[in-house]
Image (cartoon, rainbow, N blue to C red; front, side, top):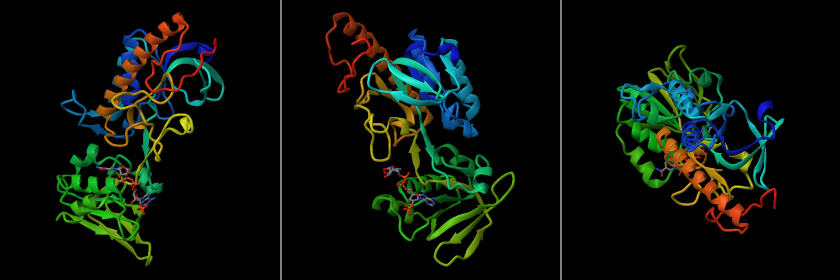
Length: 337
Ligand code: NAP
């Protein structure tokens, strides 16, 4: 990082999942020489999955980590500089924005693309972590098809748990929802859809004690939180966590507009945030679709938005006047102003 200390970049992209690396590809092809700071999980959530079968262009499917390597290679081929590094703080009061990487190197960015993604919430059990990708997953859309004619469980009682359970009935022979309370928080309509489905059963007041199996899931041990009784479901081969996601947006709290869960709010049909020159894409701003392909699409949008915004900044500096090029964005003065 020393070689880039105090350098000013036209675009800095924070995050290296499908959104960040697609933004990098487009920004690099626009000759903006973007810097990509890859964050704690280079490649993003897909590097923790196995086969990806729903990304267009891979008719045979592709391993998640391989796909992200391909994304990275394509972006670097056009001049993106992708580096391991965590943005630890940003000064938002002057432009170019000042970013500190790994608490030691400072750089400047005329435009920032936030592609920090989101992380599925996990229970935190050692057996759950050991079996991730071996039958324990947090993405029914990605992995459901691997469980044809099998018994799977879904943990959670929100809309995601209902939606994922219903979706999983397309493949699984039986879906058991395990919920820690005796009522769901999901919307009535989604509850009804799940509860009325002949393939779906519910085990109330229960949590997972242990995921069984070594190479693949071979059952789960459940604990009834009211009685303390332990039961084992021996034929379960898939465990789907649906206990919520958390967007990785803590760095921007109090600065960028967010919803109550921390998802960054962008202007409709764009990636503009409420701050001049800061754009957001991918799962950091998408609580609804959360797919690699939608993240990649919004990464492309962010690069195009940022590119156009940067072009207009040239006008702004030359004319010396202020015009609102960032729709609805808060004007941040230039360091030279
Ligand atoms: P959520 O609403 O936060 O629900 C999380 C569920 O997981 C809750 O039932 C919670 O139990 C349970 N849970 C949390 N931590 C747990 C733990 N450690 N152990 C066991 N259970 C745990 O999350 P979500 O379902 O992902 O929904 C997030 C947002 O997206 C919501 O606003 C939702 O409406 C929206 N959404 C909408 C749709 C749709 O409209 N199609 C689909 C999916 C999501 P408790 O109930 O006991 O707290």
